[in-house]
Image 1 (cartoon, rainbow, N blue to C red):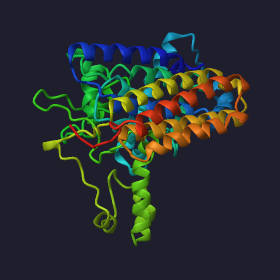
Image 2: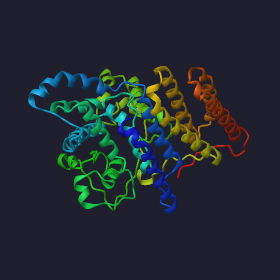
Image 3: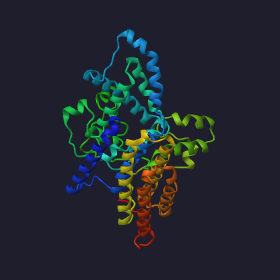
Image 4: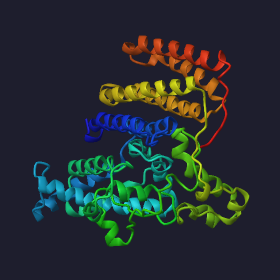
Length: 414
């Protein structure tokens, strides 16, 4: 089990503690729909990682093995048991992460992958778990330079996990600014700036663990007392569907490439500056930006019963994900793929329920029927609980949306 997977229960415990404090103190940091949307994106990222090959390791390991005699001749030796080696590895990894993160904000196709992490219009610990699913993996290229210092794959993986785990705690609004920390480390204050869409804050503070890279390369911005952060992206997502979240910018670029008449634009728009669109496509398909002077978060209102249903389903999906992550090595690829597909469909439909999407009434019943139909290819040990789950969920959902006069949906934003 990797460090990140092992840390997931602690992440969830920290979320529950922050949520309890939020309700007790009345901070207003959490909305059910946004939190589930962020956590759903995190689940999607983890489960899709079970059924695809990691390109970085696919390339890095053979290249390292090819260069290993050279490292030995030069006396380069890394050890995870040496804490100084691990510190140097994290610093080197974080330097590469800075440039990966910066480019992800500056070039269209890289932004399409990274955008998911910024779509939440709230800022709390669930935002940290809102990760891209790397549907078009590109970030691996930024870590290949670590071969120049002979970093072994296992050290690279460990340093990357430490870098990612560190970034969890900075996604909170209730940790104050600590002056000395702001000069050295990524903190909640300077990372709040990174997630804000205010003009003064956009494209700033890219470090993962160390903020010194931003100070060195001119991308640092302090959090200002007279400029409260407005979270989210300038082209709002307006859905809690995690798959749609991952496809948002790819879909826009694809439509632009299809529409524009210029072949040069069709081929180059992917690698232009973030937000670049061909003039003819933008004129025909305008996408309005958020009005920061009168900003309203996406917050469709659904019945109390449907909110509780969506929360219950999310808890079940979370438990199933933890079980799947723990037992994936014991399953065949075919069975694993079916289980992942069922979870993906569940996350998508649950997001659409939170959106107030009327078609989700029928989609949820269809999802449960599909899950029941998939039983013959699933392990026999889970047949009984899955049947019970499908029957109970189907009954409750039918009562909520077809048997209640309060099941109507209205879109209201706060």
